[in-house]
Length: 175
Image 1 (cartoon, rainbow, N blue to C red):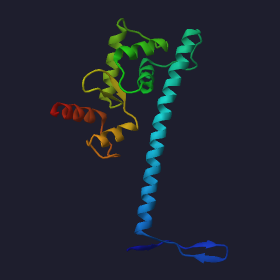
Image 2 (tube, one colour; image 1 turned 90 degrees about the vertical axis):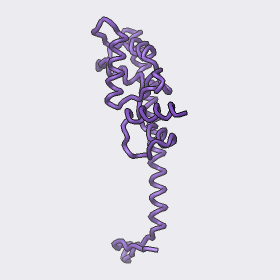
Image 3 (cartoon, helix red, strand yellow; image 1 turned 135 degrees about the horizontal axis):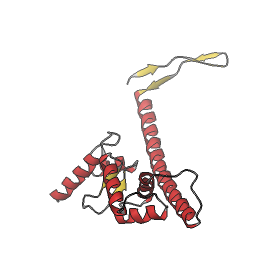
């Protein structure tokens, strides 16, 4: 067993040498990793709830004809709608949500605008596309857990959402 010596610290007038073994480091590492995972899960829950509240507030302001302090772009509204969804959300449901939020549209065909932005966000790895083509999901902290559970990668490897979607679709074809 390897024992490392840390610099000494002063406790009152007494010099104390701190030593820890590999077992102590392993326990500390496991504890820190578990706490980080817990915090990441909490952050995901908070981020989703924030998006839901932003969507609700924007929709209520639209209904009341109250202007937003800071006008959001159509892309911002789409991000909020997808982040607030539980699981995959269809482009039609995204359109309904952004209309309710009073999103600015400049084109003639609103659904085409939404689909174009959803596809761009997917290519930028902000969204995960359902392998069956039924909708989009925000790639947040849950992505590492999902992919680890599916055996596609190990948590924390920084795999891009597009790679995950391709791997998931490939895995679905094999079954």
